[in-house]
Image 1: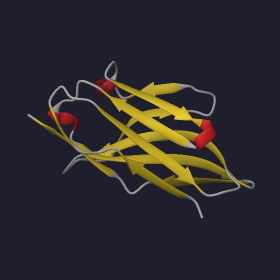
Image 2: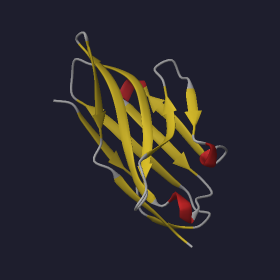
Image 3: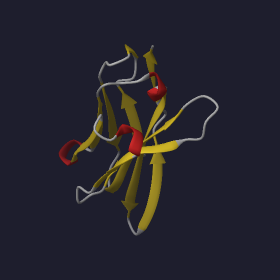
Image 4: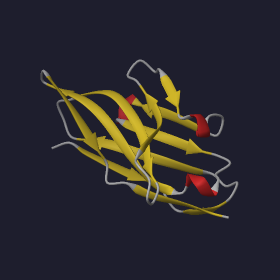
Length: 119
């Protein structure tokens, strides 16, 4: 059974840094794209950063230059380094992984980790 487990969210002051991690557990799969999304209260979930299996990276405009996504293929893990955090970064952050299992493509989400940036 595939599971995504996020960690690293907590309360930080404005200007602080956090590193989120997401580990994919299970067996017999290939990880394709991995993303970080976030959802603030009263807002829709939005894509923050994504990294493909070949290493192509994209960021939402508001986090460019502050956030860095990376992946550790050996450990089936994706990280999000967040620097110079702002109150508007406060949200629940969700990890997404697109997996190939057999001949099927399946999408999996983590349970979310809360990031709160105090002003």
